[in-house]
Image 1: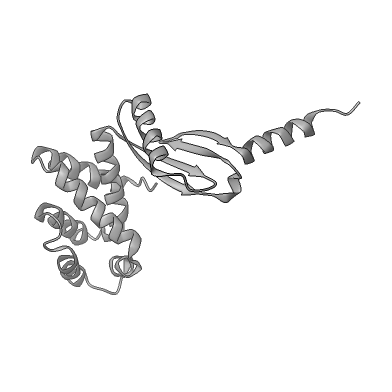
Image 2: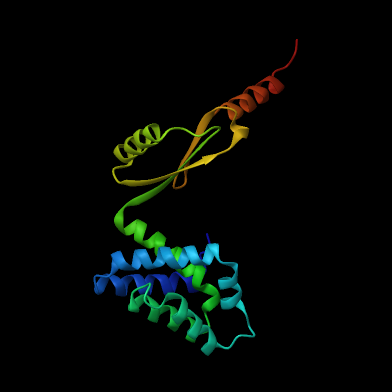
Length: 182
């Protein structure tokens, strides 16, 4: 994740101000919308990163894109970032804002990677088990990686549990290569 000082300073300042004004819930929705626009629209990234487009035009475009869709507080923050010529940092700032919100609410992110899709009932059971284990809310997403052959890899924040067949086969191979033939 991009942890530049600029991103961290802007996101922490905005988050603390939003907390003072009791707008954290709206901030989270707005940060999610802005982050999704940043990741899904290459045209938006070209707009904010273009040195040719004047700041005033970028501000007009931001008002047109987000006006009425996000809280006025969030929109003014976007305009302030742009006015200060930090618009290139918008994607990183709003990613950091989402992380601050998750930390504040005790939400952990988990990724379950399997070789084949598993049913929603099992995914819900895994989520509930993780919530009991970690004592908080778990946002669980699922990835498919056929290279795993079978089993799963579970990643919660910075912790990873690898119970895949491919990693077990790799460990067996390493052991066999380390043993001496007599």
